[in-house]
Image (cartoon, rainbow, N blue to C red; front, side, top):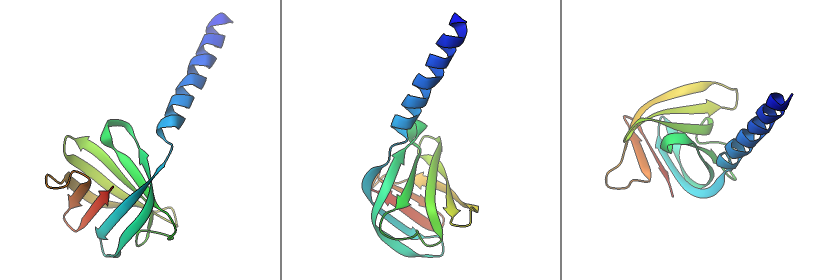
Length: 116
């Protein structure tokens, strides 16, 4: 019984830590390319593990067709980028490199994402 109580407390504490990490902060985003009109404006910025993050537009319905963009770091300076549409379609934008000139930006073959 004591083990179960310790396990439950551990799970609750872990959930709290994960929720604290998932809290979005207000930021300024620039999303260019990927066949969509450029987006410049406010966004919610959510930090994830290992430098990965997601952004959602604030005040506008989407970044082109994507309501959420996920930048998942797969190795130092390299990320896999995906966009989630209103219809729940998770589209692969492709690989991106972190900009050396502006570390707030990630650049892919036909897109650029900057978060300030």
